Length: 313
Image (cartoon, rainbow, N blue to C red; front, side):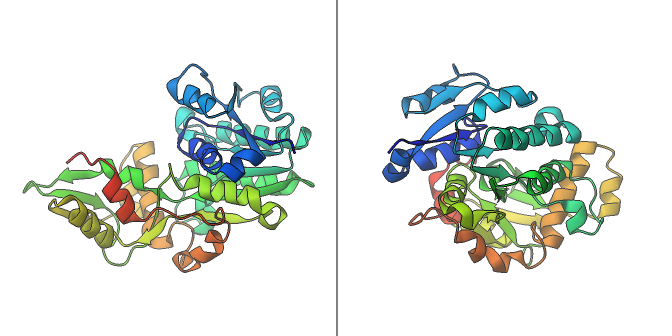
């Protein structure tokens, strides 16, 4: 039986790389799927590493729909993610996403896995209005649902990257390494995700689920944790004196910052604090997403991550 081609956009990045490796690291999946890795620079080490594992390397300009069509031509499945931060242009990212959706439909792709995020304005009834890098992807997801026709479309929604926390501890006035964020130490639920290892367990799991995953929105969470809990666990693993400090923040105080990116990121933190990122109470519903994991796979716990990663302190 011939392998099914899976086109992966952003294959040398966190999400695309994890999706590719989830296939390469499982012999049964590797025999079933052929990875077509889309990269802007096939000569970069990460691209060469994928090629050494058996990936077909291809280039594509996501701003050009004809280029995207060529990238997905003949593919059974596609995983796609866009990068708002390259342009910080909401409308451009939306158009990039629509290019992927339209190209997949035109080329007869059977299953599109779209990396998306909550539409923050709608979720919070307009309370939070500045989180553009979430809403651009969410609007593409809505577009895909409207125009997909017979194509299967599944939606992967990555949580808060565990990797972010490796850079966020700073000494306080007394020299104690402190994580300072506008979260409640004991009550805020944070959806932690090992973006590099666990993304592919969800995305390839959706691919494997086929029609059962059509229209599914999967919360990409390795482990839900309160801030005090994951800081205490990290202190135990590293043997360092660490603490968490809640930074007061409100929509009104954020509006006074005067820096678009800083305001957006701060509202992102309020989304976690007040809305559990995906919506109030969603920390209780993780099992609904976990049923789409690659069968037999095991997610990374925060303790696993803390023990296996290098910390700059």
